Image 1: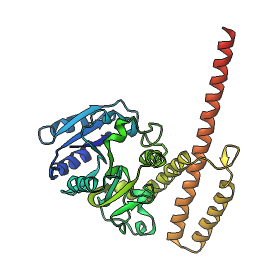
Image 2: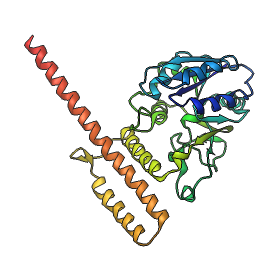
Image 3: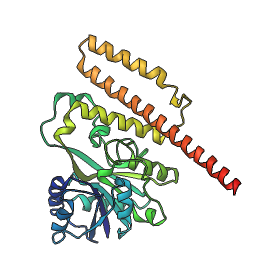
Image 4: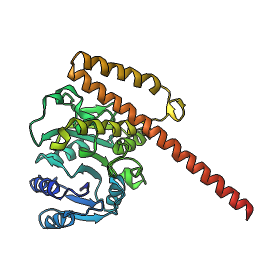
Length: 321
């Protein structure tokens, strides 16, 4: 048996369309269980979930709005079977998705982590500038050139939340998602699954790419606006720093930013003068990643100072008692 976990918040209509697609799945021979965790929705999400309980082997849970990772941790308490598969509420699986993921897991017993193919499902025809960018970090899709096999690094836009499977024994050993990272409100550091994968890699777990386990990830109209993409670059930069904040700093900001930000600004000016719209947009994307790194560095430094001051105050109070 395997369990599919999905966290959702305030996207009742998209969730309904996704669950309709789930109704067309071929069930794996050993059976499946679908767990949908409502992360504090205030729309019709609860009613939408309940409407599918007679059509899918579905169990639901409610988590007060604490973010996607906290919701997934709640869902792990309901998981059954030897394989736990993660997906999103805006995913449309191919009919044999779970059969192919089950096949890969059974054929590769030494691997603990499995990533499947994630294709874009465009709500409307994508604009020309989409061809200028690496779509992986923007729309959470996988590179089309990847072949079946072991992943030297499961972190390079390959194993991602919309199509990720992990052997349940990993979670039975006590591993959980870090709730301080990942989707939570409008502003957050990206990298919820990446943080978990980094820890698993450090523990020696290996990853496999299951090319034929395919889902389509909805790319909504608002995501095809340049301003949305540039805001995402900031969140991506924040996540990059959160996951690898080992750089030397000055005034709580990584030193390399004092070189990289002016360089990127010069490239933006050059692209603007030469009317190179593709180069201009790519430079703006990179500049916003750098801005995100600076933002997260300052936020983490402030958090450490507050924690240190609280510890010192607590020690003084204890000493006076």
